Length: 261
Image (cartoon, rainbow, N blue to C red; front, side, top):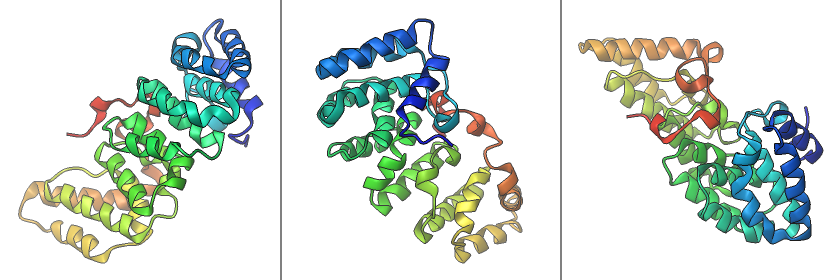
């Protein structure tokens, strides 16, 4: 698989899906920024309009063309990129902010990037939350911050397959938090998405799981049905994860309106 730090491969992936004339525009913008790094300030907002937002493939299957184009522009800035990303993020729209966060995964160390990641996790925008939980974000967050980021995804019904860096090797605390979420949903007679189960079963919290099992015999029909459905999904989690609801969609399709009620 192509590495995400393979800039030539990224450029080829962007060119393959760019709008007509977009690849040429991006090449010119990169050259301009190499000569005058401050020109990134005017080029960065124009990327979506010029290059488009089609999905990339291969190693960047969760990226869009404008994500890749913005990463290329910041790469062209060179060592000065860390001084530019704050304002690009702060004054940008959702796509521009997502582009900054995505770029952090491939640009290397950043002194200011951690603050941007934490700001994104405070929003209710699924695109920003997912982008914040990339490899860079996970590397600069505490375990507790990462776990709360995963829980935010769960509450917003963001498919956890979109945040693999944050869900790798879950701690017992995250498993317990997710199991507690299942208990709350089942108690309310509501459905549970199957992608929580592999993280719960990595460190099975017996108290919460026993509570769900007990509710299969509840005299509240909706609660009993929800408990049985949740446990059935648990047994099918591996084969069914990501197959329902918005789980089949890419991150660029997510919007604040997708937040669960």
